[in-house]
Length: 114
Length: 115
Image (tube, rainbow over all chains, first blue to last red; front, top):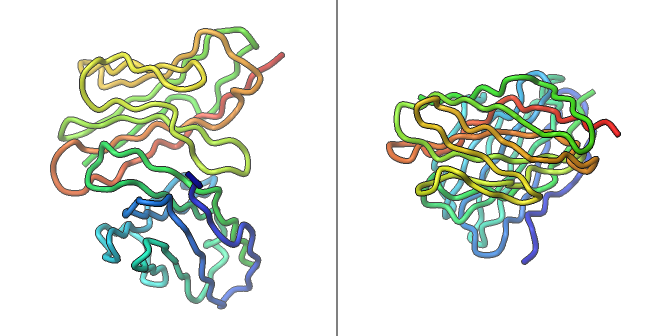
């Protein structure tokens, strides 16, 4: 089975711009979660989608949004970028349904905001 | 509410020595417990998990962890470190019941292996 893929792998944007990141989960996985990873804050949960519906949301401002398509692929969008948004954004998929399911992570998108 | 504490942001061992990475959790309901590893420029990979049953869990690459409810711990061990084990290790906890099952991750422990 192919793993979780994320595109692009690296991205450089300027403050005030917006960005869209893409994630393709493992085939058959219906749950997709997004995390922000930074040296200072560690891994922080952004949101989780299941069957095209946002099921859980972390404590991030409304500038961070996401969606999931019928084929389970997911995108996240960050508008009005700030310097502090520079981070590794990780997507993870799972079969879903409960906390016993492990998550399978993609390699991440490294976003740099200048 | 749940939280995870990983003692030691860095752990340094010699090749062939015992690896011990500590994880303590706090959870209002019985948890599921996970250890993930992250190599440079990669995402996280599951090493092992505890859901129910035997409290000593064996994972990939020779790692194992023991769930100790009385100590609220889930420490990760490996008898003999290899250079290839150098990476960042994350402990995570999910509630086994209740509302949100989104895992909470610890801050990570960087394992350094000296030749």
